[in-house]
Amino acid sequence: MKRYLNIFFIGFLLILSSCDDNFDEINTDPNRAGADIFDPNLILPNVLAGYANTTVGYSGSILFQSMWTQTLASTTTGGANYYSNGDKYVASGSINSYIQNVWNSDFANASRADQMEKLSSENPDLVNLQALGKMMKVLNLSFITDIYGDIPYSEALMAEEGITQPVYDKQEVLYPAMLQDLESALNAMDASQRSPTNDPLYAGDISKWRKFGYSLMLKLAMRMVNSNPTEAQSYLAKALAGGIFASTADEAVLPMDADNFPNTNANSLRTVDDTYEVRWSKPLIDYLVANDDPRLGISAEVPPAGLAANFDPNSVGDSDPAIQIGLPNGYDTSGGATDISNHPDFPGPSGTGDDEAKIGNYSRPTGIYRERSAPIFILTYGEIQLLLADAAARGYTTPGSAAQHYSNGIVGVMLSMNSFGSATQLTEADALAFAAANPLDVSSTEASLEMINKQFWASTGLMGNFVETWNNWKRTGYPVLTPVNFSGNFSNGQIPLRQVYPSSESSNNPDNFNAAVSNMGGDTWTTKMWWAK
Image (cartoon, rainbow, N blue to C red; front, side, top):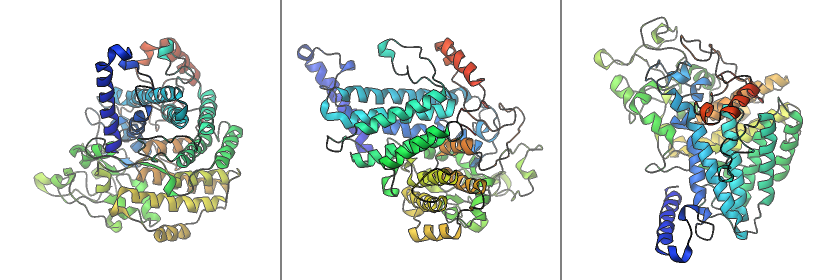
């Protein structure tokens, strides 16, 4: 990853230098260089890394969705304690900055993808890179709409054409448009043509990019099962016909570089306050314990005793599955009615005297989550198989039964955990044994859907893909979670269903912003997505 991104920046600087040295001959603005001067292949790694890092860390997911879904928990409250935004739906001092991070970053990233597409269109040898530009735009803009709701799409990224105040497209129009654009990109890919270079995800393998694109199509199609089931089934069929992930060897897992392009979930969890405050939630740990899940001993640890050890990101805790206990959401250490010591399952403080950690012996993420070189899971084989299990349970046509897809999904998500590194290795035999011991409940459609989507919740949470955890929970309602109703919360004691729009939108694009708010039924944390259950 480091090599690909360094190539991008070094190449860009050399091109600018060359343009300056030969300005009289080239007579071209280096800031608007065409494909004959600037190789658009150099943009691809930046687009991939840019997208991946908006899905994790302080871009919002670990501060909001990780705890809205009760995957993680924290005892912090208000003020500068930023995890109150997620655990208690209580605004911290910097909440407005967190709200806008994904909007600003992914629109900028979509713009880079758009430039990659436009530059590639000038060279007939770059049809595959041009298609990837369109695909990356869909990837970024779909991520934005799933977080905020209606967004600019049909008029987005058109400032060069003079459109600086784009209309917001309704999700019921936006989703089919994204799927059409994705289909167009996939139809344009041609394995006989030049492969992309500087590709840190698939090393220019067009067959794998096609599998990724069709797997993304399947995911977006499944978003619509509640709101447009006919369109959902149509694009599900197209995705299956095109060819989706066949195994974990196909999935989109981006390697990160600890020094220059780190995993920002790890950056967050290595911040000493976060190392202390962020714990796995009670619902998640209870779920793993109840199922004797082999991922428990890999993902959870009780920190060494004492405040200093709890703050130390390099300390190694006890990963014995028998002692893991999840922190309930909605508690603090302030000494009042909501103090965690009042919870009936409180395990007691850790350490004594000045070295006492009031938060207690609750399980935190293990060291694999604090490794800056940890990969980012963009889309995995196991996720796709669980979505196919969901589809089959609803009666949609899939290659196998809901039970078989569910088993495949379990094995897939467990083997994907091995991407974290050697300390996390689960054998295929272990995964198959667990799947065999935990078959899908097929006694009713709802029983199947609940079991499938609880597994999806746990699996995406354990891989740090918290926004996807939240989106699938909004789509299905599973698992059933009890909201936190902490004093001063911004969502009336309900689990947030979206992030509100950045405040700048009401001043930069007022007419279209106001129209979008009216169409959606309000700009609140609990305004329902068009596709949500």
